[in-house]
Image (cartoon, rainbow, N blue to C red; front, side, top):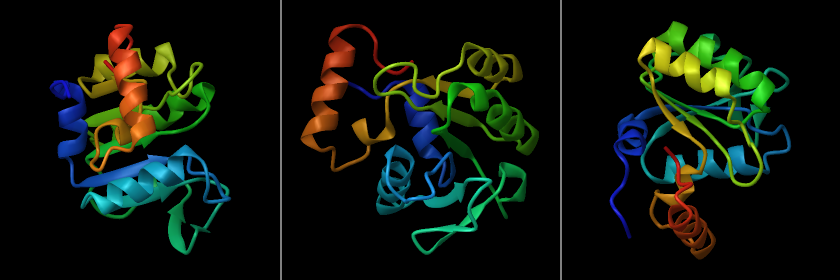
Length: 155
């Protein structure tokens, strides 16, 4: 496998990660990413304004309501909501934001990316942490390879 880009290494170096946009059903990319982050040793907080808990895990309505330190934020929301999440992350002093995308635009919003850059926050545009968090399953290995081959990997 190729070397991990510095933006991704910066995001993953944070022990304290909030995942914004986890589905209330506990399924979908946000829940899977949160589970893999936990399995990799990260402290993970779930954020969804419409849930008090997801799968028995406490859920917070906003980043500002998450207790304690948050070093990185995984955004798994609609692109229209990404800017709001990024603004909250900046207000909290978050150092890295990852805007999830598998196919289509995912959570990537040009305005959210620009806001991160303007504030000096490391931003990962697209892709998924599961392409880098061991053990990387075959689907995420293939997905990462294809994106890298096309020059469209997370950046």
